[in-house]
Length: 432
Image (cartoon, rainbow, N blue to C red; front, side, top):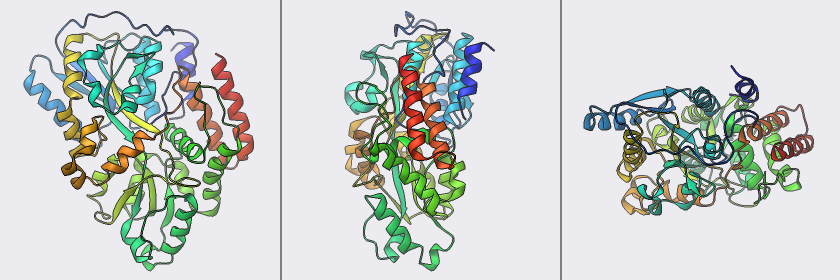
């Protein structure tokens, strides 16, 4: 294992998510930062692989089976990686640094595009061969690096607030909260109900992994702060950012967020909500379809994330397909990418797995909206989402965020000290 790969493992904690782009841990050694991917003519036909986190829905394999039935000589094999994004990224980087052709098509967190493109780990794609004009603009932007397309938009993602409609109604609450203070007040009313005995108010994703970067970013943005400004300059040591971090810290202290949520990733929180342990829960839209098959089916709905003084801001999540620069059979791979990301399959992913589609008209389809009432909320979440820092040194950035946010949440640092230290760490990364 070379020094750069070793450092990548050291600085990575353990997805998610949604909006901020992941980058390699450190910039030294290997790869080019020119942003000019290797030239390719997309030649070669034959078997390929599709590499992604574990499919918890079972839908992906069904789509792959349809491709394989149509293309018996160009079959795709599904390589499933761990469910957490940090582990996925590290394995993809390992494959790229060894220039292995084991991985063909990579399902990349939307924030990894800059890193993978800058290091020439993925190929520049023929933009005109993808229907980008039919997709939500923020989604398309996550697939580009320096103005060129390096990934095919696959699914988008916006954080939303799941809440128990039955309990709010019984407590006399007519609408979901739009502010943190309202959410806490609503919980105080609901927790007095016999049906709410033993329930906690709220949880998101707070384990030291990419999900914490997402939840920290949402809290900061929802309080009017930023992690980096429009020019990418770190600006997180501010009163607004402190109000966002203080919301999380204080919520752990006063019991709004249960202590065990410090270990939560997406699936942990989903299971807690579905089993009746949470009144409110921040997660991605994929939870909707699964929760409808649980004990809370018909007893929950979706709303925008609350913020300090009004509706909050989600981090922009999602996954895009990148073509490994070291893969074989790239003509087959390109055809598969166009097939896998077309509107027909996006509709399948929406209906069967509640994956947020990149296509605008699916959100505006009234028939679909009647079937999936969260779609209007999700569209607004995506359109108004704040991207995580789109930087080549994203690995260092997300590692620093996780380290300092976790220190504040667990009480080893004050919010003020954590933000001061984070500002210094982000400035170091920006100077590289």
